Image (tube, rainbow, N blue to C red; front, top):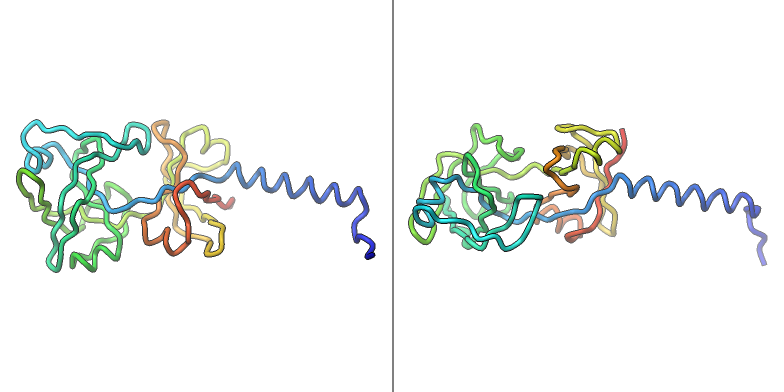
Length: 215
């Protein structure tokens, strides 16, 4: 029988260090939410697509005050169409379509990777609803991967709004991701948003954890 390379005291110290490291890592981790293609609408476009005075029907809560609605639309580009694209609520000041890079090949559009709401210079798209259709002049993006944090969590781990960080995702196909935007607000709950293609490449599912790597 081989003699252990550690004394009992050394072994206990090692265990304590590993436990502390895991606890610290957990403190800097957030659940992952996988974001499929979707659309945000303003009041005028909602009226045009679903009828004057129409309202969204919430079916699933997302971030606090935000939700996936029962309503869907079709979006059409120069090359093809995507059907049953989910509308997210509540209504916004400007309509915006978020798709993956793979979706862009189907549609024949070339969206930049952008933070939500940063729509300058983005392509437009045709949107078809049950009561009418519209032609957006701009608003199609591939969403920049990002993390929502509440103020208390951001303060505890020492990060701030608009900071760009690196994130580690574990598992068999895990990786370290660069260029992850932090969005900090008292209206948010901790969650990392990546699109379906990123999730498939990393082999992750909803509620898996992502670890914010300290500077």
